Image (cartoon, rainbow, N blue to C red; front, top):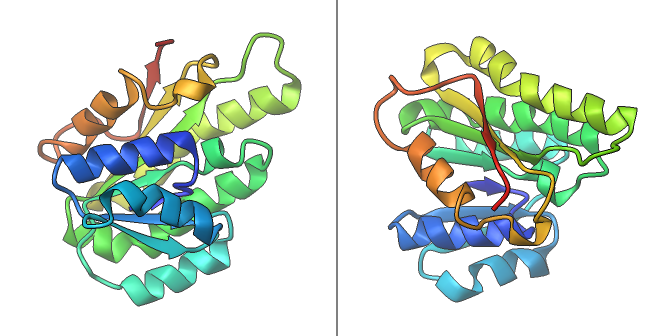
Length: 192
C-alpha cells in the first residue's frame, strides 16, 4: 500500500512494486491522480481515493481493512504535501496504527519517505526534518515486534528524480528478508 501515491515517487514505486509481482493499493486524495498511478499497470495496481493526511480517513480505512494481510506500507505524505508537515507527522502513525492488524498478519514493513531540507532552510523546515527523523524510532517503540518501521531520507536535491537509482533498491532492501533486519532507523540516501 502506498499512501499519497500521486507524487512522482509514488508512481515510480507503484510501478516498481507491481513489476516485482506485488499487488499494490495506491491511496491518493485526488481520484484522477490515483487513476494515473494505476494506468500503466492496472492489472496489479488498485486505487483508492483517500486523503492519507487526515487521521479520521486513516481510521476508517483501518476499520474496513481489518486483518487482511499487508506486507508493506509506504508513506509518501511528506513528498506529496511538503508544506503540510503537521498533517504528515500526525497522519503517518495514525494510518500505520489503523492498519496494524493487517501489517501484523503480513510481512509488516512500514517505510516513511521524506526529503532532507536544502541549504539555508528555515527553522520550520529543520524542525520538520528532525521530527520525521525521530518518527520511525518512536513508531517502532510503540508498535513493538509486530512490524518493522524505517525511514528513507532523500537528498535535498533532485526532486524531479524521486525514484531514481537509489530509492527503489532501498525500499526493496528494507522490505525483504526476515524481521531480524533494521527497524526504527533512518537510512540517508545521497544525491543521484
